[in-house]
Length: 323
Image: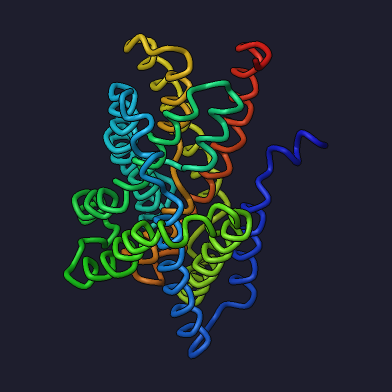
């Protein structure tokens, strides 16, 4: 029972709660507009805080391991998208959900869980900070570009217009840069109140998810997605994660990376960020499409946490007791 509690992410349970709430009591009319405005404000706040939390020291501290970081970024933004394109030929799921699978593969890596699992596995934590942070930094620009290049032709309806570019700049890039530039003024506050700011992060994401799924439910989401489709989707997420984990393990051996760096490649290279994916989807896609687009991201998020938690503990046990 304790093991089950460790594997189940409480935040994901809250996300599921938001989906259930939106399914029973979706925001409609003026309420939907108010929730959407609050969700937009949440996106701005989320990226402002991400910018404020990222120190320049963290960026420079592990940059010497260029081979590791290049391998991680290649896995995140080259291998994953290729796998995503391959999933577009799988039957049994709706076009919008299939587009969500492709969107999942275009996201940057997670930050917190990648670093945490690297630490548990006794890997190179400093390099994990650099790889995960750099992936998220690049993802703000690369993910929308990849969406424009690949999803406009996949039925996702996400060709980027001037309005979309404006939203990306105003809701993602500008808040991130302002947060980072404000770091000398608020960096101490951010460091002292990480737990509180983490709750703000999660609260913003919960609000965005509720807004997105409310719009999707109003448009008839649950009449379009069957139980069998959810099963197929979960199986595809497991297959994608297994393929990337095997690839990163083999790539680490091929590049003769030290064990500590190979751990970083596996954990930073195999993950996709729900925290970044939710607000980016909210910016790039129409409200009625965001719900089904996020289903694969939410499923993959929980599966990657469960699998990587098991792997991290095994790697850490094999590494021996800590010094």
